[in-house]
Image (cartoon, rainbow, N blue to C red):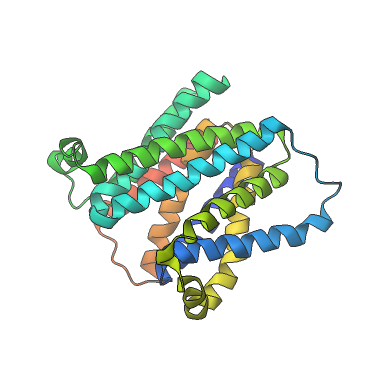
Length: 290
């Protein structure tokens, strides 16, 4: 992976961790995420006049990829939310990150990417680190707990979320390979905004949009550039790097999230979280060296 792509993806991971922090501090999280897309979408539109050329007319294939990617990412959030509503964080979180297991396979099988032994070792280290972040204790029974609960609907929802995200990552890679990254990001954000707006038309959201604006106005305004930075940096980086490496490296957002929790939120850092963070860091270094 080139230094340019590596830097862009690390920056996107930082922005990703920051906008997740904003979501955590918001009130009505579904509505807040919709407001985040409003803010980032407005900023993307404000940048349009400064493009070096005209916005290229998307082909039917590009439009299909933009729509397919947006459906994947909206479904990812839907299944993830369903899993978290009634499942334990320590059980659900590692399962929702299983996309990292699928993405290298899709990259090699569908996109013709090749992985070095060092790169594979790096991916496995990041997967192991992500799986350990929310463990309650380092024991075989704790590691195998998700497998013992495969019949649980929350576990199934989390596994589905991880699988769907991996498909969205492949669609993302195809999109930025066929269309300028800024323009594909714009299409993706607009499609996702449209799908989430349809969701908020349901009766149970009546009155909640304005209420969340009044409660979290400052966070919403701050979220616009942060989400836009995350989306753009990742897709520019993805256009320069194999998706098999890009998605695992972006999981450095987990490491950044741990650091934010320790230094800014006063969270404790147990030995397991420290071990997991070091595993992720070691994996990222291996991928950079591959």
